[in-house]
Length: 138
Image (cartoon, rainbow, N blue to C red; front, side, top):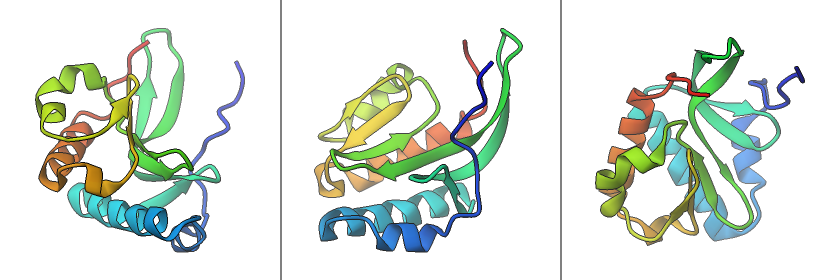
């Protein structure tokens, strides 16, 4: 099995955030980082070259596959802020209904700008995702 490339590392979160292109995206990334740190009670840590994670879970899948992964995290990608909520977002239709403008995959939420979403709903969603992290599925 191939080794996981995205791993927790000693990268400088503040320097990474300071280098984010675009003033609005940089401010949104810093605000989101502060929100996630406050909600989770965990310090921000770099995972790979471009993801900031909070908390760490040791996942064991039904297949026997094991890995360490962030409990939740995000990356200020060029197209959108990508939130790695590590839970099945289809199960969070209630909290997502109040969020505002976003798109999503199975465990990722894509937000163009923080002003596009309701801040209380985002905080609630982050809290729920963090509480439900660490439950591996195949």
